[in-house]
Image 1 (cartoon, chains in turn orange, red):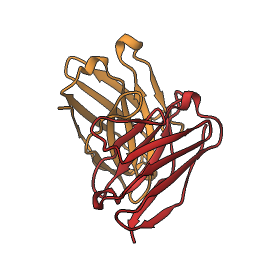
Image 2 (cartoon, chains in turn cyan, blue):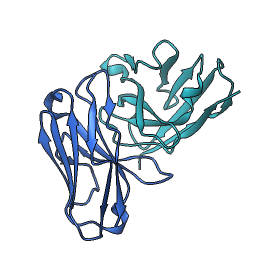
Image 3 (tube, chains in turn red, orange):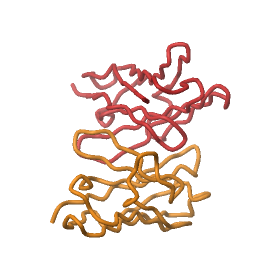
Length: 117
Length: 109
């Protein structure tokens, strides 16, 4: 059974930093493209970014609102993907989900990030 | 960036009815790389349809997707009580930018 578990969310002040983790199991993590998707309270889904598998080049891509502030990385030895979030803004407040694949076939339950003074 | 517009915003129907949800793209979706997701309150989204018309594993056959180019449809043939939720379309053909529609809320009439 595929499982994705996000962690690392919490309350952070504007301008601060936070690193989220997502641990995967039940699939060949090293071959999986991994995505981050967020959902602001009461709003729709927003794709944040993606890291390809190392066999596919390992490249990262980001949505325009987070480009230059967020960095996605992976550690295949630990079956984990991360998103380092810097220069956080109040509008980054959201539940952050990790999801597998080219289309998003499996999702974690999410972790809440609140950016507030 | 491809903009996806879903309609209607809210759809009120009774169990047993047929639901038709629309997703229109601002430009053609490459290779019909369009997916549909279902999200219930307090839960993560769940993949229903990919490639515009292929059902994901374990998805009941009352869910079907159709369309091509810029116009796509999710049809639920006979609504079950558990189908009332928010539905999102998403395009993954315009790599590297994925975009979602704003969602359609399917509520019990």
